[in-house]
Length: 249
Image 1 (cartoon, rainbow, N blue to C red):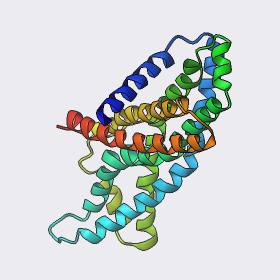
Image 2 (cartoon, one colour):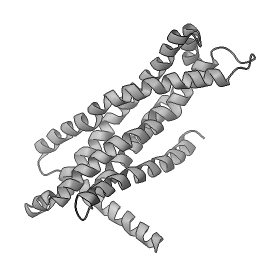
Image 3 (cartoon, rainbow, N blue to C red):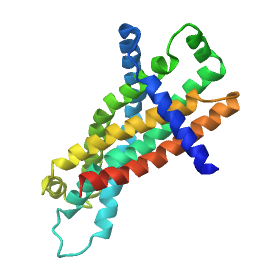
Image 4 (tube, helix red, strand yellow):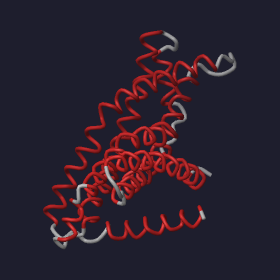
């Protein structure tokens, strides 16, 4: 029974996304909404990203230093390990898990409110493809801005580690910088950027689906927002495992 329900929901999701990615009826309106979504979903999230990244970078540096006390290891190991953690996981996977709570709930509640107040029904009555009109700018906008957010996260996290080295002296700042540069693998940056594109699609599309299919009132909108965040997080973790296996084997 649960399997049939899950398959039915997945089928509805696929049909919903097929409707969402049609050709826009008015390109001027689409590009205006697309730019608005980039600003609302991405640029408005930058303050949160800066704060979280700064503290996570500092925390990674402190914990790595406290747990790597082997005198046989080079001193630059702290900076190098911090860099690897940030590039491989935090700047893409953990960041998107955090953003799914902010962005995912925003998308689901916005579209869900439009559904329960019959604004989506009004669009359908006017002959407008409501799924395409509402969802495609959000999905494409988040996919567009997410790589830039990831780059900001990388830079801020590494700077956070450098800052904690200066403030506490736990690691010599020059040694930390050398560790960041040591044995650098460029592919890890591209790996994080590619993952972020998939995660952006997961967050925006799943959240839009839960909001679009809301039935009921304000209570159901709240439940849809919660379900959207939970499902987005689960699918991000699943996709993270698959992409890591495919691209880093």
